[in-house]
Each structure stands twice: as structure tokens, then as C-alpha cells.
Length: 338
Length: 234
View 1 (cartoon, chains in turn purple, cyan):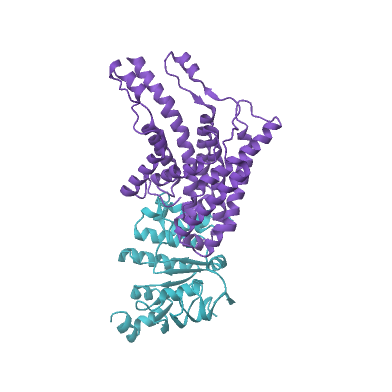
View 2: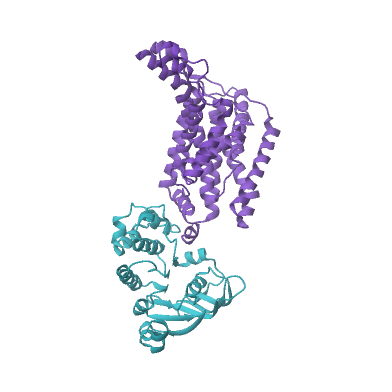
């Protein structure tokens, strides 16, 4: 009996808990980028998914160069070594688009919906640019040791039938996400510059009266957004493989995460990321074997006991998004300011 | 020569002038109060002095220097502090963070100014870790005034500082404002509560439809029968 329960837990751990934490961290990092832009620049940046893709692409290109020259990090993926360059180039991209595109609309004091459409334009441009540079195909760039814990090792260690595997990319994702979030919160709440960003996000006019320079705040926002995008994109690519088209599909769960948590609120972005990730996994998980462990043998139905096919996982984000907008449009943490 | 003066200011938003040849000013250590009926252009006159309104005519001088062409941010750098009537605190930040943001342009040690503000408004020291958005109206106004004081301004401009606070809190705020003026800061304020405001004013300006109607000391205006009849309710 107890063994069956433990097997069921290991099964859920392996297919829901571990992937959920990793995917939730990736969504949280993505949603943080969206939320930062919303809190300071007051628009929904639909190009954020492609910015993540761009960051991952640069990281991959640098990784290939490093791999060809024989540089590596042993058990860890070489991409971690390449990531800082990916971040710098992505920051450059963000500052460049702001200079060439968004600043023009800022000076014209455009309404948020104009920005939104403009960001869709940037999305298409970036997605074309990425396909020009690296092509539309899948790319492999993960190296090093694949697993922190293999399923078989777990079985041998515990004597259970079900294995619990933890991929290196999942471990790295979670550790990096925790570090980045801690750093971001420290920056926003403890440093003068971070506080000035919160002040600007709270009350633009009063920030101006206090001598806070808006252009500087905007610049720092793009620097943080670019860095976050490159990190989130690379971690997602490491974990799930780099496919340029998947990043467009990521925009929906990322926005759902940001909005569920309360757009503009960094804490909300993180909470929202995990809500969306676990909802997706819990709804699309096939519970058949779990039912098998928890009930006497002949109760197991023929079907997969799956609420929704994984093909429809995007619908989960969309559904949650609609529900939140109907019931509590401001999100869990009532966002708007940093 | 008056320390801060707007002279013969005409201008408005868009095509229509709200101010017509309007002049207001204040000297260091003085309290100047601008009163008048609704729509008299009181707030507009103050915004014009602060550079938030394009002037078609007239000029603004500070310490004998023409500052008409400067943007509000630049006037802050020169030593003007401005407390807007509404949305005058960062609601999602703590009281202390609000004050720190007030001192954003300063690069030197702000701890003396900070404790000065806390001495002036002791309740803020108690609530310094609380979000400004959670404070009462009167306490918020104290945060707003404190924030403006953090730049160590030479001139403090207040747009209806007692709007929406109880009479008791209003008296308290006026007392503090006099205290601030005694430290040598020039105070220019617009007030809805004309009688109380004029009673602490060294200079009073009564504006009507964007024009100066009466200009005198606060006490003289309070004693003026015409002013009392028309603007102070007898």
C-alpha cells in the first residue's frame, strides 16, 4: 500500500512536479521581462517571446564557437559560458529597438494600443531576422552531463518501480531563476536606481519633480528586460531544445503568467509563472498509471485519464487568462507598479 | 527685488489665456498665499511660476535671474520644491523611500535633512516603514511636503496643501508651514481656505479670472472690507 502511494508520488514528481518547477521558472523569468516593460513603459510588449528567441540564438552561436575551440564547463552546458555574451547582445538589441522605434512613439506620447501594435511589428521583424541568421530548423546546443539524477539511479536508490529523473537543464533553470529573482528584488528595493524605477513606475510626474531622469529609467528597464529575455530564452532552449517557432507560442503563457499575477508586479509575475506551468501540466497529464497505483487493479479505465491532450496545452493559459480577466482583472497581486 | 517673482504672466493651455498680466512673488522666509474664487487661475499661476505652463508674456525670475526658459526639472535643480495638489506621494513606496526619492538629485549625505523632516513631522518617523498609500490624508500631505523639503529647496511651492484634510490637521499643517518659513525658505502657496491661509500670510494675492485683484499683506487683506465681503464670506 505505502509502496503504491510512493510510486504514485514518484510518477507525479517525475512528470508534473520537476518539469513544472523548471517550466514555471522559465515562464516566471519571461513574465518578469513583460512586467518590467509594462510597469515602466506602460505597454504590453508582444515582441518579448522573439527577444527571448534572439537571446537564445546569440547564445547558441557563441556556444558553437566555444565548442569548436574546445572550451567547455565539464558537466555543465557550454551555453552557460556563452550566456553573458547572449545577454549583452540582447541588451544591445533592446536598446537599439528603443532608440529606433519606441522612443519615437514616446516622444509623440502615443497611446498604449499604438505601442502594442508597434511591438507586434518588432515581433515580426525579429522573427524574420532570427530565421535569416540561424534558420527555421531545430538546433542542438546542449552538452555536458544530461542528468543530475537518472531515473534508473532513483529506482536503485529507493527500490521503487517508478523513476524520478532530474535533468541538468532543469536544475540549472531553477538555480538561475532563484539567483536572478533575488538579484532583481535586491536591485529594485535596495538600490537608489532601483527605487527610482519603482518611483517612476508609481508616479511619473512626481518622479520628474524629484529629478529622476525618465530616459535613464527607460534605458535601465531595457537593460534588465534584455538580460532577462536572453536568460529565459536560453534556459528554455536548453531544457526543451531550440526551435525558433516555439517562442511565438510562448508569448501566450508568458502574458497569462504576468496578468494572472498582476501585470506590473514582479512578485505576481513569478507566482503567475508557476500557476500557469502547473495548470498546463496537471490538465494535460495522463493519470492512468497514478490511478493504477492508488486503486485496486481492475479499476483502471482503458483511456489515459487525461483531461486534455497536450496538443491543447496553450488553451489552458488562454482559459486561465480569460477567467482572471473576468473575475479579477488586476491579478492576484493587483499589479500596476513595480 | 523679490526673491522669486512671476511678473506680468499671460498664458494658458492651448489657445485661450487663463492668466492675464498676473504677478505673484515671494521673498525668503516669507509665506505668500494666492487665494481667489474657483477658476480664478490660482493653481495655473503657480504652475506658470514653476514652468509647467507655456508663458505667452511675462517672465519668472529667481534671485534676479530670468528662469522663464527653464523646464520644471531644471527649476528643481535650482532650488524650487513643488508639492502638487493630488497624486503627490509615491503610494507603493514606504514613507522613507518617498523621502529618499525627494532627495534623488542630491549626491551628498541626506541623513541630516531626513532627521530634520522627521523632527518637523514626528508621525512620519513612526510610520517610516509603512507604504505612503496606506496613510491618512493629513499624513500623506506631510509626506508630500517632506519629500519636497528633501532637496533642501530655497522656495517651496504648495498647491492647496490642506485640500481634503480635517480642520484640526489643517491648523497643524499651517503651523508646520510657518516653521518651515522661519528656517529661511520662501513659501508660495495656493489655498482654498482663504481666511486661515491669509492669517499666516506675509503677502496675499487675490486673483479673479486670471488677473490680480488685490495684493497686500495677509493681515491687511483680512481687514479689507471689500475682500471680506467678496471672498471671505463677510
